[in-house]
Image (cartoon, rainbow, N blue to C red; front, side, top):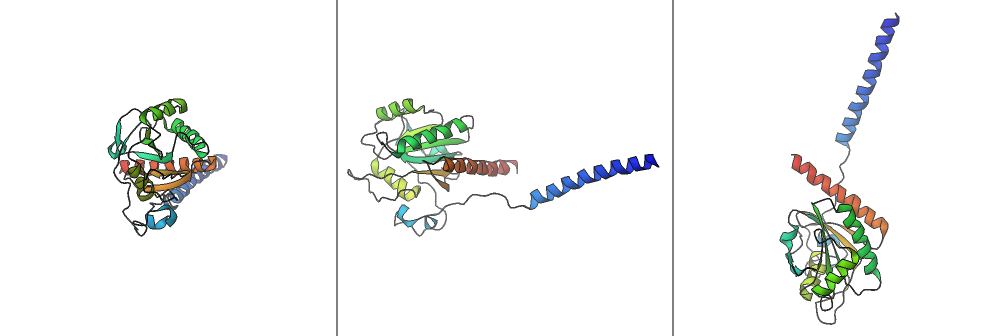
Length: 228
């Protein structure tokens, strides 16, 4: 009798654990998977978007570009092919939000330093001041890793068009003229297809945490796709 009860107890325990595993697998299979929005111009505050593209509802991507980084190298969209990247707009002489944004971008840099799938891209909004030499000095001071993070300068109108027509991130209207000055605290998460997947306040630690969480969601999507 005792032997029978012992066997019954053993099978009950095994059945219980098998049931728990099955329930978990069903729950995992049925629960909604985390996804990120693919942002289109029509979904963003119209004050942040150039009027010529405000009604676009699909297929929006970051336009091709050609700019110069802190090492004097020409940087184009090809340097970001097959990469997830985080973009922002700054200037080296900014006394207010830029130092905070740069420090937060440096924090992100440290977190992704061993991840070859993610890069950073910072555009100066005062290219007439931020020469290659100035950007290099700033990069050294801020601990920029050239393998991961490009600080870029170049044609002012191209940069301003990118801000308003590609990244959908700048409120002040500017056409790249000599007296224009646009700026934004936004960090923009861009996927491997050059689509915008998130906007974050680059001055707030909780927003940086949200960005990093979203980055992991996006990486998981690509990892899943590579398995199929």
